[in-house]
Length: 153
Image 1 (cartoon, helix red, strand yellow):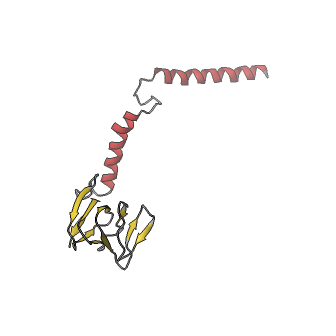
Image 2 (cartoon, rainbow, N blue to C red):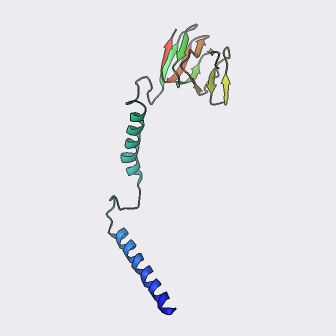
Image 3 (tube, helix red, strand yellow):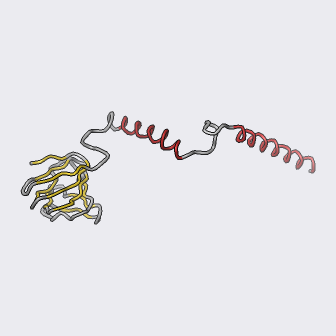
């Protein structure tokens, strides 16, 4: 029984020595280094992930879908129609939602759908779920921030 315990202890010590030696001899930043740094994530993983997603979505991103919001001025009575997935925020003025038979525009700030004919809320994140003619009509001089495709009618 004693010899079995001694053999187990010797085996455990040998395994610990091998694992400890591997970790101790690993160069920082090497593939054997168990520490993942922020710079590795930002400089290596994120660009690889972004390239993979763009490849899977059809070869890159469209210019109309920028990473930042564009500030757009809309004249009174003008209609703005959005592409599906477009996001916008009313910064100044008033407008009335243009919806379709399939629904309106998602108000993600308040958590509900804005149906056709509803007054647009200021400073709410609004998202157009489909490219089917949804948008708004400006009641007066309007300034919006837009990320995504849109057109004037």
